[in-house]
Length: 94
Image 1 (cartoon, rainbow, N blue to C red):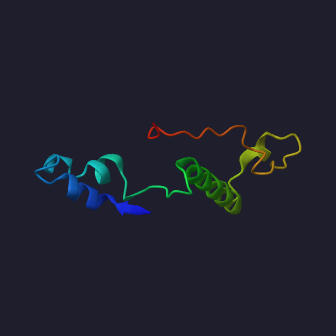
Image 2: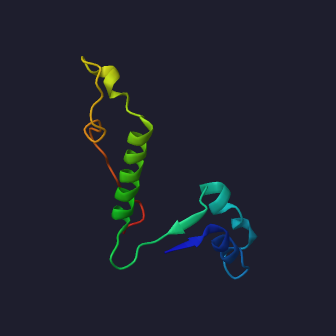
């Protein structure tokens, strides 16, 4: 599920909410076009892991793997072995 940040700004800009000062807060200030939220069978961490997986696959497809420059034989490592550590966190979970 997702919602447009423009719609969110319009909602928050109502006089009974925060007023017109929030126009541009999400789209220009934060740089978001839309916001997504998980359903009952999903969680934010699975969203993050999906993004990381897609990013790594795209890096591999485009040949963005410079680990061969640091290997004695010059052969790049497998893209998944080239990553030492990934930390995924959120500031939204309470």
